[in-house]
Image 1 (cartoon, protein in one colour):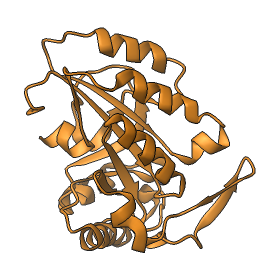
Image 2 (cartoon, protein in one colour):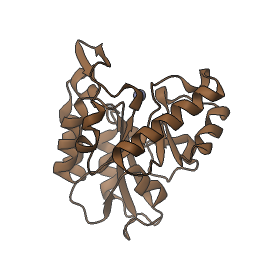
Image 3 (cartoon, protein in one colour):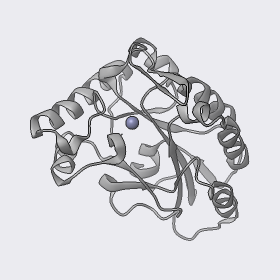
Image 4 (tube, protein in one colour):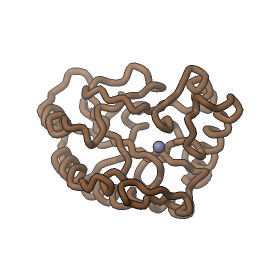
Length: 226
Ligand SMILES: [Zn+2]
């Protein structure tokens, strides 16, 4: 692991490519944080929207992707967000291959990872993920630990941002002087800050974790593949 000589790394993972990502990125940039955004390139238009807790959630248009996500990592989340394990092999392949190709064209980078829509997968899905050259794939499991993941294709997070243990995990991470590399991995959806009315949670977390010499602030690929 090359974390620029550091033993602690912090990374974030946010899904679905939605308008609230703009506000989230503003917070991340203010505090020097790096995030991986898992994008559904087959629905990258504000005509793709849904309502949750009275909040309308709109996708960001593909034409804005490169500008909005500059400085962060784009990753696959499939073309149209199906439960992959319910699809045929050909459809799984299309969902991953198509999403990866779109993102690579729009961002001009090699896409290295993904998050499973709904966090679900089976052995067939894993095989097709690997066949498409994707090196890590995030689930929706939380470990509340800073151990490096044992299996990058069944990648867990440390916690979701609304985990009540987040403040305690932040304190623990800041106090840690690890002998093994320690990874703090936080995930969620930026629309949840609107639907739960709790933007303060992520602002407070970033503020507390920012500006530390002993922490490598990085994307998922830098944390896991660097
Ligand atoms: Zn999703």
